[in-house]
Length: 568
Image (cartoon, rainbow, N blue to C red; front, side):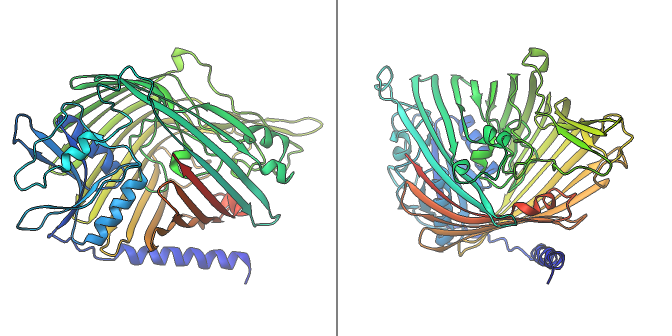
């Protein structure tokens, strides 16, 4: 069986599986007995903000307001779930994301019961207003006290202010990858260390400083890559999230290097337009290692279920795309027909001046369980476009230059949970983005296009701990130029499945395929949580299909990998 036949059969299997899943009838279970309490807030605005962040991560979250006592208290709970096994699985997922919680059963009649204690190795979501919460009618005494008295990286008790006992955390991540497509070679042995410290100056002001450095030892194991690639990947380090937080009633300010996440679908980026990204591994990496924070000033206003966010980025950070000859560089290095010499220049980033700054505004509201937001973002394009110049004479020379230009983006997101089903959608309209054309007579090899990207996803949590996510996404070139490399309407689907297959062992699979041409990516992975601080993962990143597709162009970069992480 030749490779083309194998690819077609694999693509057929992927599409068949997705079509079958798309026809499944998801059952909404009205009786809900188990929830995971993840916060207790004196301020309802802070509770609403936390609910919004949870739902962006794919967790159905609700608030319970108790007005007993001298001050009201808003509890945040994830769920409800009809079976304890599902709630326990979600409890583990939340803890793995540094969101501790308590498993609580809430029978249709009777008193709620605390079933599991919170984890002690993660930060807690809480309010700063009081040392003790009043228990509501029928609530087990002390649940809220556990939140309100636990340590948190964004809060310190008054007796801690002014001392030198900072909250110190971090992680060490080591990943080895081996490309098995011919020619076989080690492709990554990246060792990353992140250190962070944080503290609260007083009730209204806190700070965080973090730095991340990495060393890729693959260049000591093999000489497969060029010097340009080695210089780009071998050794690097920079400040990571480093900012000052200021709270003033319903207003909150964050100044410094920070993540600004406006949308999050599974496996791919859509409304997440602000953060820069490390694309040297394409999307075959954990999102916490892909996202690069921006130096920004952010102001947020909370009032009940309404949230406004304004950002200004005076000096932008841009995507890291690597160097020609690396595994996932966007362009190949083969000579096009009729070209004697190919020159790919380095990424030309805009000058760091205020006229190249970025700004945006986002409005969101949570009403009747619907989390809806809209935003406008004006920036230099974080992803470069590739412009070309053809010189003819004794020899024909093609020079390609990556460049960033101004774009405008208008977007919206929506999320709503229906029992065990979570519906999510995102749409982004982008003006003036440049795209490469397949026309040797074009003077600069690129043309401006307006695009509309949109995605709809359904996520279902089963009672046996299985999580299923399926997404349909499209890009519409509203003023399609026939010379660009893509159709007027590009369509794709994705499937994500995860399940605990043994105690502390999870298996997951991400499949993404384009439907306009044979073009797909498969990422199977098994993760073993060896302890509260250690986890080990093994997996593969497999690409196939048409060489003009998003994934098919990396058909020779298929690889297996092992990954170990220690958090402290």
